[in-house]
Image (cartoon, rainbow, N blue to C red; front, side, top):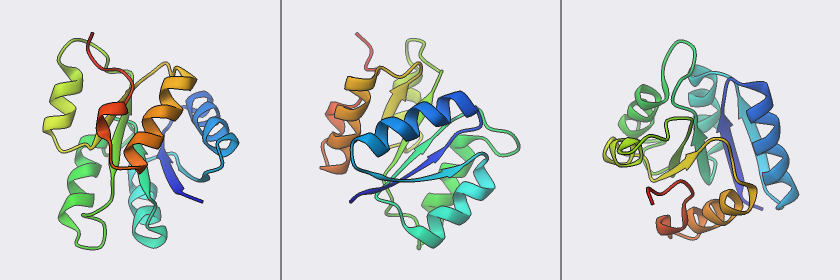
Length: 131
């Protein structure tokens, strides 16, 4: 069962993403801010981290930088889960080092297909591609 860590400060978005992933058979870990997410990532070594960008304290891009700088977490797959959905945001976040990109609001079928694609090593399946 793949283990997925969601780092998301909005309780409604967290609940939706967690329920969808649990329904799809994933083990879900949850953190409401980046520091807690970093600790969980180091301790539990998830198969995928879904990282909100606008978090209290440390933002998601800075948290990604910390994950990539730590040899214990540098290998983790990390996807942005964000309301940044303007033209160019996807490219900017992928260039920052994210392995995938999911726009909010989540479209459940595309979200689950994208998660499956990332877990399988196929980032082209992610949601929120500029059309």
